[in-house]
Amino acid sequence: MILLTGFEPFGGESTNPSWTAAREAGALLRAEGYEVRTVELPCAFGDSIRVLEEALEQYSPQVVVCAGQAGGRSRISLERIAINCDDARIPDNAGNAPVDEAVVSGGPAAYFSSLPVKAALAALDTAQIPAEVSQTAGTYVCNHVFYGLMHALRLRPGTRGGFVHVPYAVEQVPPGSVTASLPVGLMAAALAVVVRTTLGTTADLKLAAGATH
Image 1 (tube, rainbow, N blue to C red):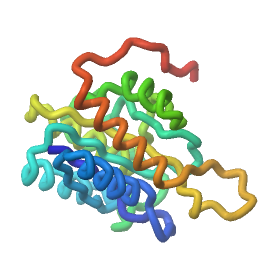
Image 2 (cartoon, one colour; image 1 turned 90 degrees about the horizontal axis):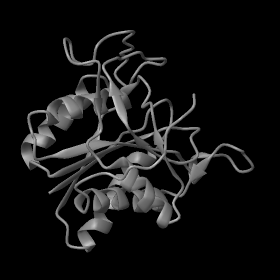
Image 3 (spheres, one colour; image 1 turned 135 degrees about the vertical axis):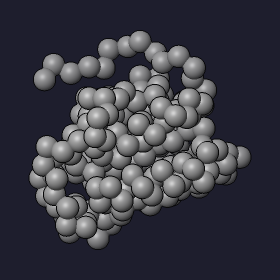
């Protein structure tokens, strides 16, 4: 079983490409014979993890890929690490704006993704989909969910999971804008590549994909 999640719109947007891409990736994978469930998460601290945990309990997935929008980025971002910090620059959809609060009180400072991010990067490069390994998932609801996922998966040793950020969708960017964007179909293809790579990889590749700043 594969679980894919995306978020509802936030920040005044009418759409969130992470959810559209998750749904389309689910359809691609189902057509290949995989069993997939897709869940839309609320863009809200606390509630998002609650909905995710309910999905984990209901579906008992083998692989979990959560996706979120990172407007301004130009590539599919394979997130490496989630930190135990909520620090909201803008309120979430429920009006919450935590500052310097723990995602999980008493939890570890950080969790690493259990997805093979380097192997996925190589597979995305082969598929000619622009991608990168990201060293930060921010401190908003995306990181909140990423941390909550990995905290929950500590009790599910047979399940691997992680987080992928996607850029703006093409239709979100005004004509003539230089703001980076990608077609949703390409985002969906990327999520499907991440899932297939995870299912086919037991040990991640060792290749340079770090950052100097």
